[in-house]
Length: 422
Image (cartoon, rainbow, N blue to C red):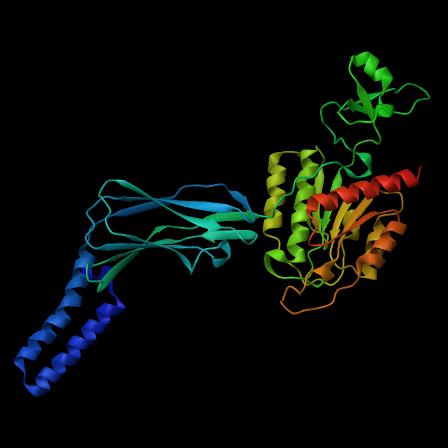
């Protein structure tokens, strides 16, 4: 039946109920004129229901694809394309499901379309401010067609769900710890002086500001351009980025928490090393491999950012990632509040002499726990002292310091430690 396609609105149900009450009163009072009013009040919503059910308009809608990944804090424009193949009589209301964490007001985006010309394309758009990292879902897009009086409506789903990945902010980083300013595969790197009795040397083209004392004259004469020595070999075995995302290790809530700072810093380091030509693994404190492999491509970067976007805090108490850190790879660890047992776990699998770096977050500077309750946090000084004594390069990060400045301090700390061992 055509009326089964629609349903009465609250206004329609109220008018129908009022008509029935008036009809009952008219019968009890034997008032024929009042009965005519009741008949009109009952018939009007039923007639509206029949009209809405018989509407033959056909609606089509799609979401135009946007960027598959957007960083936290950016603006995102959702584009909707509408088309109808029939004449619309009544009012069209559109509602697209949008999570509140994406910065939308209410439970979604709503539009009222007064007129929709047949066989023509109508474009609609609404903005989102991406305030929270994660993998979010847009949709479904639901259309409500109502009669001119708003007594009945017909609902239909025009578009399904779309996936939107909100990635952590990636800060631009420069330099490499331990003087490894060149990653494997960067242009200008090479080998020279590999004859008997001479150590291998890595060289690159001279850059403005380089120390002239590092010019490698033999390679300069052979290539007819200034070439300078690189202090150390590139990271041949690759690098491992360790992220500590335990609830107990972080403070604060929402986008300003220490966890979000750690995720952003880890993402920045991961992207920086991959773009430098490194083979990078991304692991978490539970020892799970989140991203990484032998392919040094943009796809590898996207995989890492997707993994960090979907990452949620765990309730694990201690670090158990030691076995994943064993091997010849260089390690860059981004750690929250670490207890003595966690430091011992790191040192057990990273013996002295292996290039290891750590950023310790001073989580006491972030006011509250992830659950919103205030809590004290251990001082990172003791953990930093133990790691430095074991040969690690360590720096401490606070919320007022950018990831770029923290990375620069880590590089300086690594170079200072290298000079101390010479």
